[in-house]
Length: 134
Figure 1 (cartoon, rainbow, N blue to C red):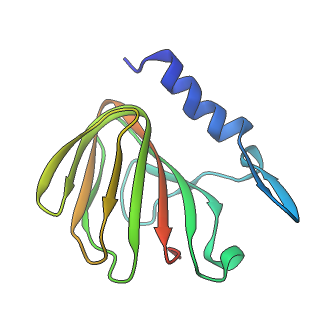
Figure 2 (figure 1 turned 135 degrees about the vertical axis):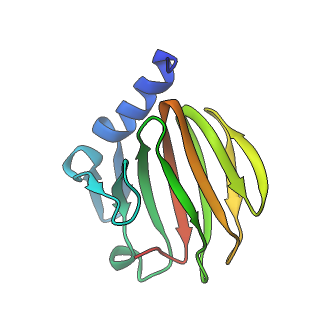
């Protein structure tokens, strides 16, 4: 079972989090979850998008249901990072298996194959793309 404090931390991000900019503010609770278009059991909350940053970067909260995965893929033009907030799982980053648990950060270079498999409690990530993911 997910340690309560880490699950609560993800819930805080998802419902009480805020994006604060010099000229605007956005509550994460006002941003809807969307189903990932390719991977079953994966949901995204697009915190800041390509349209908002002129394509420079994008930030996303990611929920992966227990036992589900983001299958192997690459991003030809983007560097991607994952910050694990709650849950556990395994990530394959350029052929190397990494254990995902709260506090782990992983970086994926451009065109580097990667995949993520959630453990029995699911997996909760903060993903960032530079330049932005559409």
